[in-house]
Image 1 (cartoon, rainbow, N blue to C red):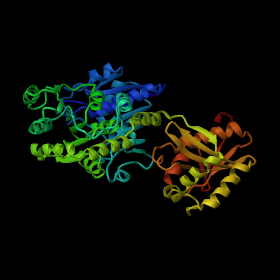
Image 2 (cartoon, one colour; image 1 turned 30 degrees about the vertical axis):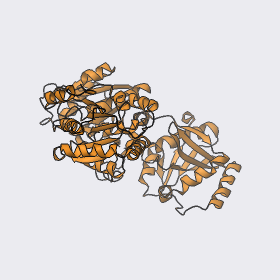
Image 3 (cartoon, rainbow, N blue to C red; image 1 turned 90 degrees about the vertical axis):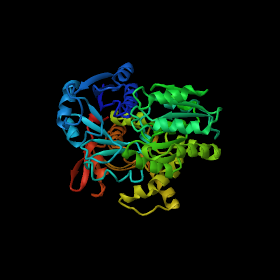
Image 4 (cartoon, helix red, strand yellow; image 1 turned 45 degrees about the vertical axis):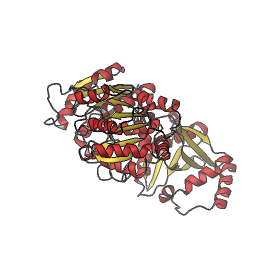
Length: 498
């Protein structure tokens, strides 16, 4: 049974986002049969009780250190490794203060490493990098920060959300554009006072029909003022941080908060938002989301006035079509299955192979003609439909050719073609557009080798010709057991390959 240890911290100063998305991943891993554990600092508001209550073991890291500042990455890893005991199959590191040195030590000890990052501001030495955000330069901003062998999981498709959000999404009706209930939540570390500004802005509207729910810890600055504002108005309530956020979002029509981890929770449910940023790394996310009309962004908390927030709420209430469109766009962007996708990537996932059929002709044409697929093909020229259709018919009719479609729980993954000649087979492979960068190429190739050994016992050797500049494919074949021989990658199929 695979074992994964998640290194993340929470506190009243750090907030709880890193630990909560780690908890989402842990739940997905456990659902797939893996053992998930946490390695955390003992800090005020550290959420260790929340993690333990969810059924996950917690290892305490650096128990004698008062602050991570002054604790080196090497010392932190040494403490975490000692607390966790036997090196896990995977370390998941979700921490802005930990990077390449920590990850290198973990890999040297025999574990694979998934690094979760939002900032692209430090080097990593990891096997897999996850950035679940939507920013303008997402595809390129890690190019100089990762080893060449690192696979990437990029974008909100991989947003780590707990199962409660997908469940709430399934039962929530489509947003009708009206704003009757507002949810205000700036996270556990609202040191800038965003909650107070939002409540004062809503009070300016002076609408007794508008219901408001605010989430704020007792340690939040001006907590007494927040309490007084809510107590003075019918339909207003102030709640402590809760694990009922999915439920609260599902009953709200508008959220006011930050563009942190909760951004993807709101999108999944279809909850429009007015956002303010509480950290510098949130600004690129907010800008990209606002440009895509997924939310209304006003700026950093300290720079935004109460009047600006009030005006933004008035504006959205006057434009129900815009509010409804924002809700629909959020739901289209985040489906709530990101944690399952990441868990399957860590655990290998299940790839099903089937022979191509006549009705696969058009999708295979579209996949093969995609610019990114053609870029690394031995023949990069665009395909003509009539030529492709004739080729496809020949592939299906000729026993010397095998055309396979690889699928997983997310749908089509890639195409494998084997050209058979006695005991040899030549393979070519490409991934379905949109599935590149998931790091599943090697798994698809390995699944193909197993299928071939099971169905064609006479085949003893498989070769693949790859353009040298196609480093992703070179890595995928290498990881699948192919060896470079005279510019061709070769794999010998043995009886246990099936």
